[in-house]
Length: 258
Image (cartoon, rainbow, N blue to C red; front, side):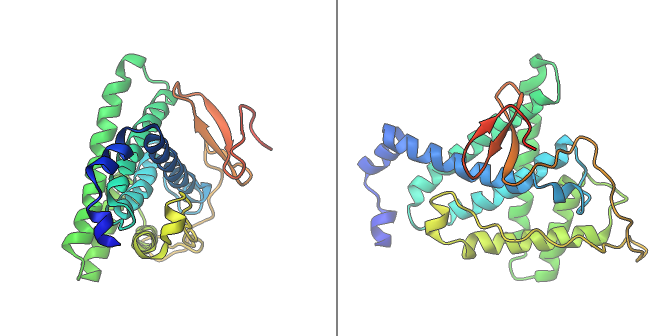
């Protein structure tokens, strides 16, 4: 019953946190959830059709956005709220480890890695807090909430680019609105607790218009962006060295899949 879940015994809570089985369960789920967020946030369409800059800050903001969706679902969990909080801790620990690896991959001096990580953490918390503000403060004011979400995307994903297209911001804001409802109400508990997230479709970014109403020209190649065959994803070792992971089979390889 719900009461049993809310009043989980002290022994059960200690078991969840300190036992080998409890730790393994939350580490595995935290890893699956993070990899799901990372896979969606790394989709090449964000950086091609959606024209999000392919640079560290924007890529990190896309990962943050998808981790925030998972964070909100974990906070709202009614299956096992205590374990959900432990999984949330694990999810952010994995995010910080991944962020550190991405910082190293940028080739920064090893002595400055922790400083860069603290900067990224501060930005991440501000980003998440601004989403919280938009959905809490304007829960009953759809136009104002939408405007606020677009502002969050402009600030963190587009890095306050004055040349950004309103059409682009609107489509990204609609995605955030949809995904928030999807994670909180659409994804079944049985899927979520296995780390399987049906994210749904990425928005259609074709026929986007500039701020004068003219259709944008088609994007060329994006420097540095690797487009891999599905279901492969590029990921990093702790040292920042790239390798490739098959999200279906869990197979990994140093060689780029063709």
